[in-house]
Image (cartoon, rainbow, N blue to C red; front, side, top):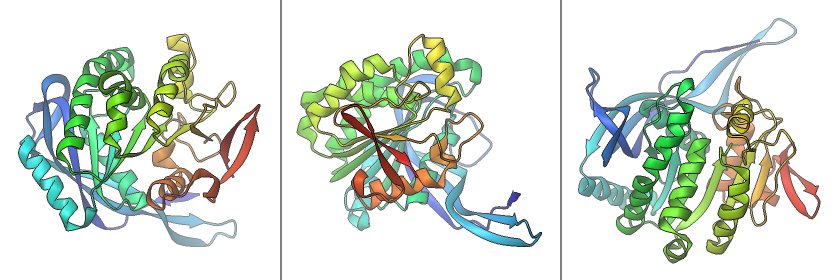
Length: 333
């Protein structure tokens, strides 16, 4: 039995954001953004409270002990909108102050509001100890289980804005290293922006994208294999796909769409040339098995080894190699 009890606030993390959601009135300090589309990109900085998760664990002998995990919990505090020029000036100042030109950009998935997107970006960054500026792109998800089809349509509408923001980030951000992390439908948004809107030829010239991490990608498997994987390999972006056989959100998506999703391994683990596939079926899961990047210490630990320690997949301690035909994938121990 475990009883969660958050410790006092450990820190406040400043998370840069860009969004094409509509601004809305709020009684809280700062600004907030809704679920409607806006034809302009808004830029700013969100403040998120972070703290380690503290547990009281009762053993079989009836004795309780308190443990603090490495997993971080988060709570949105406020968002401050900036003009585009001020946004990039603040980013460059942060780089001069010790971020060394490193940026991690997170793109959220289906059924996420703006505040949750800020919390998720902060959770990943704080949990892995990312050394650089943390940033998120928030597209106008309806934040409703019934809004899946609308979210997919909005995603297509939003991808041009995301492509424009990525281009601005590379051109004006003075980056040395860009780590791209996306979850669920966010993986579709990010890959479409990269390979449909920007294109492999332009991406190859940037030479700043250090890693592409696709967690539970809600992307048509056939399109991913035919179009996206060859484009990734042409550009040479080191890419990792996390998949699970018990991801009920993706199993449902596969049924709704009529074709399997790249992150759904319920019919076997899919492997892709030049891409590291990691089977997360056995890690601690949420109820739907879809948000293991927020729930599983094993996944957070692997992200830390990959992104912060920059260890290749064969050197990361929590994984074991498996083979499927002439391809290999990796599985959590």
